[in-house]
Amino acid sequence: MTHAAYTITLTDIARHLGVAFSGNGDSPIRGLATLKDAKPDQVAFLANRAYLKDLAKTQAGAVLLHPEHGKSCPVPRLEMDNPYLGYAKLSQLFDPMAVLDTPGIHPSAVVAEDATLGADVSIQPNAVIASGAVLEDRVVVGPGSIVGADSHLGEATRLHANVTVCHGIVVGKRVILHSGCVIGGDGFGFAHDGAGWLKIAQLGGVILGDDVEIGSCSSIDRGALGDTLIGHDVKIDSQVQIAHNVQIGDHSALAGCVGVAGSTKVGKHCMLGGGVGLSGHLTLCDGVQVTGMSLVTNSIHEPGVYSSGTGAMNNLQWRKNAVRFKQLDEIAKRLSRLEKQQLSE
Image: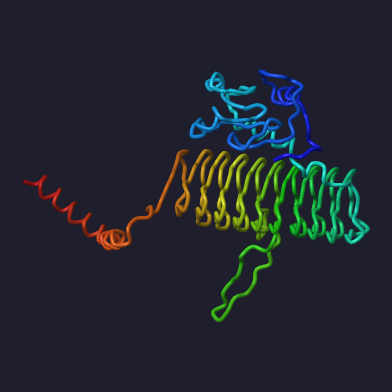
């Protein structure tokens, strides 16, 4: 992207990344782009060998890349062992959201008299800050967002438009909540009396650690009694459902459409691929990776990569295999009988 307000020099960028560079340090840089599309006032990056073909023809003002590709670069370069990490750091310099938020309270916002607001807080149109809420310094509450009674938002936390933080929720520092997500809605708790369902009041809350990011339209339910706990630096994609009393360990990442049933504990540094489902009351140890669309019905006690389900195949082949799957138990029993028979002969 390009934005005139973000013009900096190549020297500034190299200093920000803590790397050396080749080329004119006074060259103005106004944005980031791909190797293929970059102009002389933009920085591109190479983190995937599949795009090496675009390096020779790039017109970028500079390229961020691994030292092994430095000699192949026809333009000024910034060399890093992890160029994708460098790209992530640079993207923050050119984020337009960094200058769009003006501290203050929009006239259409509703702020309770006993709410506590820190310095440089931005409360945007039609936002609602309920009684007893605490917003620390530099919090941004986007248009139409709601901060419920007695909830606490840590410093530099951002709520995009139409976010709901329910009552009694604790949100850490530098948290990002994207549009449509709901933090602290009721967990799915009901008791059956033989004829119908009686709602169980959800008396716990939700605690989000520092540096958490939650995607649009995701839901994190409040605890039935204790709190639902999301650790530090946890990244949750869009349309994810976290049920009541779930615990997610620090630095874990959950891709889109993951569903985690109640009271399950996910360890630190875990990764759940898109569409993964975790049954309730399970434990996943630290360092577990579950590949997309897998269903986990038992606890996992050893770190590693886990998968379930089958990949797509021709429907006729799948139907044949589905029939055979139903026969596996009988086949296994027959095989066992044959093995015993051979051993006895």
